[in-house]
Image (cartoon, rainbow, N blue to C red; front, side):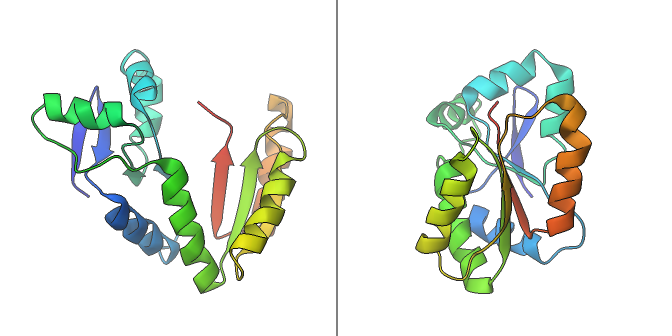
Length: 164
């Protein structure tokens, strides 16, 4: 995938259509794929934290989620086509998941929010299977338990919404 280096982060040269297509391709690949949706604040943080940059750059796709990222690319002389907002990307990707009868696991938010979101998603996207949910308020010592719970449900897509 073609990308532009912005503050050390390899931001994918995608528009909304190609980002959805790439995410859809990832559904049929073996193993795990990662998509990150950084805005300019996250890229600035990464520029001062090499370990964070390293994590971001392990992604299969990093979409420009923020007009500041697009403007930054313009300043660098390698203009990204458009902002690909993570929220909008996920909404379009849920359509694909529903059409294909795929499952999603929702991780994040305050207790009960993920469950409510799951109910609303199931209503809005008939065919979308909810593999499970878990709030984002768990302690580090519970990481393994949460990972085990997610792996047990074997979702096609894990949506992590625990913020930056």
